Amino acid sequence: MRIVVLVSGTGSNLQAVIDAVKSGELDVEIAAVGADREGTYGIERSDEAGLETFVVNFNSFPTRAEWDAALTAKVAAYAPDVVVSSGFMRIVSPQFIDTFGGRYLNTHPALLPSFPGAHGVRDAIAYGVKVTGCTVHWADAGVDTGPIIAQEAVTVEDNDSEETLHERIKVVERRLLVKTLSELAASHEAGTLRVPQAG
Ligand code: GAR
Image (cartoon, rainbow, N blue to C red; front, side, top):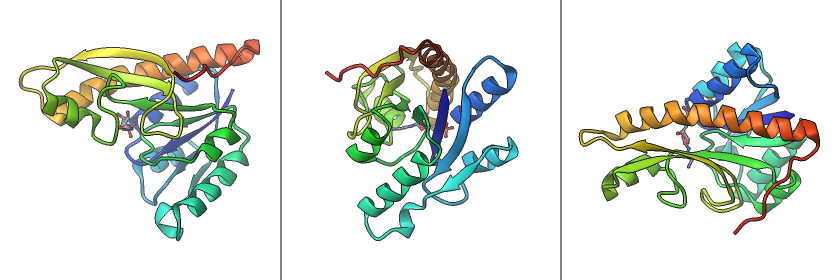
């Protein structure tokens, strides 16, 4: 199963995928890693791992539609079976997702449909929930919406800050992402990889 991974920042989930591929735990081919801006640690990690990388800089395009079309073309050139949004903090168009047969995977640091968006951990703390977690799902063109594949809960401690809670969630999230990709790769190998119907 060929994947293209998209990142906007640190790329610690991506690193877990890279490590799992290197150790032989995860049988996928990382065709390339892309970012929406220059200078991300995620791209640096990928360069260090000897992976193909690219940047389609959101700020270099006059309109979102033109950026989206450029991103679609760039990712499509790698002919991925699955595109993984791993901390990729941009909404993509329905055309982008259609180009990849709906196979656009996202990971989110909350138990969706609760706390979607860029601040899932902060919002969970602000609401005062006692349990949050992470979600791996097929993304549609909404904000952290689409059919859920896997979730795992993480307890919120009384003294948690956004940083301490996010770090504990990420430990679980990295494992869940690798496990989900592993299961998808097995389905792909067996010719049974399907994107479930939304709703
Ligand atoms: C992850 O926790 C991911 O779920 C989140 O960004 C973090 C990226 O961390 N994504 C979202 O909030 C999407 N709405 P990383 O760059 O260290 O992998």
